[in-house]
Figure (cartoon, rainbow, N blue to C red):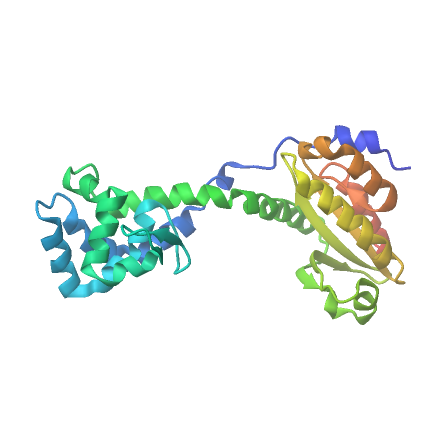
Length: 278
């Protein structure tokens, strides 16, 4: 018998290990990709004649200025728009297409003063710090990946074969019940008797997304479970659900297979039984 209050009492505060906070491999690669340009721009540091220094770099390799958006912690990639000195709405990157534009960028962002006063010693180290800061924005997505990694580790430990990131279009009967919206499942476990389609997530904080997720899964689970040989499984955890308890309880009554990181052992037992393990 499923016990919702027990399920709620088992929810964990966090799934974050120390390697969650910064992806230094990605940060290092991002810096390495623009390191040569940053080294050229280093000549602006301590310059007494900023325009002359800019012109020297421009005449040697004007593409070095294309990386300057990162100096103000922005990844524009030709999309970020700003108001220039004349009040016109322009794409940020367009300022890097002329010496005048580069000077406007340096002066109006305050970077010219920062460079000339030697408050920055090396742009490579400076950008490494910026990349580390920007990487914190990726933590929200990383939390989901951490949860997927934890579930994968549990399945591996119990010698359960699985596939990850599998689309619903693989099965015509599932496509038929789900309609035109293609669904990607975090895990698929196939046994002799049944194919389990798994969604995995973790919420340490509340928010409207939790209600949306619960509603969505409450909608698709009965459709998938109506197809012979298929079962929808939702593995979720995190004390964030306490802020959306009612919606989760509603989903809990609709979806037969909801597990957290504590009672996932019950799902492991079911898979083994379906697989006819002894």
